Length: 266
Image (tube, rainbow, N blue to C red):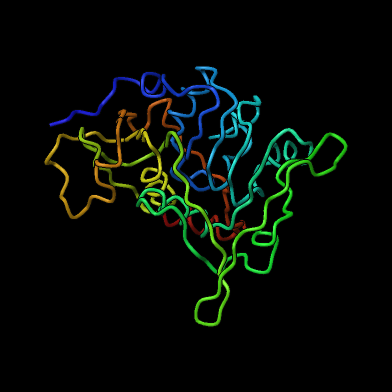
């Protein structure tokens, strides 16, 4: 048996160097490997190239690395909930490779499956395929790096654009449960980008809320086999490094009469 557990998040990320490329699981605030990101932040690693759906949000997840200018370039599909992301991109401080969300997911999955490239209809006839999409601005607002045109090929009478897969140096993921051999189980929508990032990374590091012994997981409930995972660190739910935030809390206003009725029936 290969025991892939490490004692702390700091130990797990200790060899991630400046300039590394890194896929990070999560979507918004769901399934974020916050303990690993925080450890990387404390370590002082910089000039990172991240691959993440939305690069965290302001002051949380990858947002703490972004805030402190630790990220040089990011491959992402959504900017809307991160003001720092947008500000740095428009100010020419951050290189951004905007990628359709489904294409981003497939780039990671294909990379993990050993597929170097694939054709997709997403982006045909736009700057995604034709090139010219701003990736980095200069201080005066001029585009200094733009996307290049991609190969387009017809299949069955329809056009498809060639997209290359992603195989970053590292991947950081969060799972609800895992065993010492790296087999992982994700909770509900936290399954979003986490399995795909884990597949793509050359070295995948998983933080798990519950750590179990090999054989305790039902093979049928395993979402990601341990072959894709190199390190596992236990970060128990409820611990300081495992805080879970709600990105947008929505409540329904009730009238005073409804409130009184509820109190009376309690």
